[in-house]
Length: 565
Image 1 (cartoon, rainbow, N blue to C red):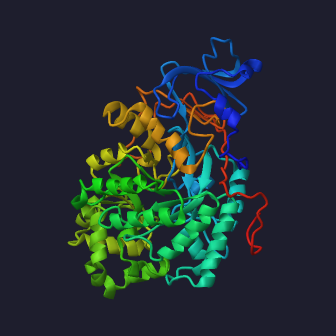
Image 2 (image 1 turned 120 degrees about the vertical axis):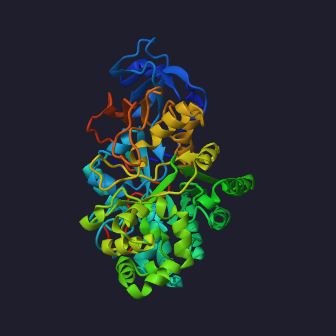
Image 3 (image 1 turned 45 degrees about the horizontal axis):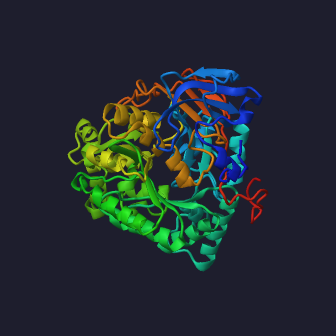
């Protein structure tokens, strides 16, 4: 499963001969494994669709052209008449690293035509030297301490889609400093750089950060680790803490990283939140475009919804959260601190940025006394409990749950979503996970419906994007961001990650109220040339691979003797 080939290099001869409508002379020498006939090929480049057959052999696209007319034979023939044949969709921002360990079939993703998920934000599955307990995001028990150990675990289990992982700055920092928030000493920073370098040599793709509002507490540390990653040909990806009141400051820092580390920069889920900020996203767009005009490689992604999803802890002040989950929970239960929390300007501003009490939904909890409110907004819970101040409800529920409630936050405008979507440097990404219908709580519908929402609602029904451009934003543009040179297009020689969908029927079938429902209108999905979705049903196949970054070095030793190799 682990793809140790140099996926980012294509022989010059292949590039010269790989024209979309050509049929290689050697293509007729033996039957194809799969032949997709009669479809409208939307090749991922943004070019207009064209009629062609697609021949697949040994996991790659062997030919694109009028193959059936030439008498081509195949073990399996798929009639795609009236359907669109597109590259498999690449999701640049996901949390599937733990989810794929729990269920490697990746149901919610492959049923959308997604063939590659990118993980690692907030906490990554490596490094874990000296850490105990659950894995990275996902709470899966980990018996590894390195990326190699995680990747080998996936390989043994098998997965139905491909995966790439970034290394999280915060994970590296936790290994070195625990929950201590003081600046790293010179020796600690050296250790952080060593762990980052080791992670890149084990196959991590780049560096990812996630900050609370206002950006990094220790910017120089981020810059130093970004420079390490740049030396391995990786990229830097930023999850902003504020996509509202302090967004300008956070974009400025991302631009600084691009400039000083000389590294491509990608921004997660570009948006503008808080009603007071609606209609001002054009300023952030101009900020990024000015940086791009100076020659800085800065791109972004978005999910096609007006609500987001993450922990309720995000709108609590830093002093309340400092020291990890146990200390956070203690402060929430301390009645002497309650008025200080409620009156803290950060608590007020960040809660407003998240939709205030009428826009914040309790989506997932673990304890029955809290789970009974899943799917309800804070104001609704307060009314049900007869509590005058919804802030008290938030603090009480967080204290009861140990500070780990997840929520949906209705905080963006539809007009801003559409404006962002039209920017040529913005791709589509879900910020979701590869889950199934048994997922806990009330998850965000994006886990199941991001791709069909774009292709059905925004392309077919609303005309916000053209079909070819929408496909580009989910295929060749993400491949360009990552530096993948043999995925993201329907092109001879490329890996056969393919999604076949019905443009008239593709649709999400879920909602915020009832999110657990799979998409429709995607009858066939191939991952590395193997059918994973066949006539709308999951085949059970697990042909997915871990794609290793440019810095990968076979047999990389673990520097301190820890971890599995």
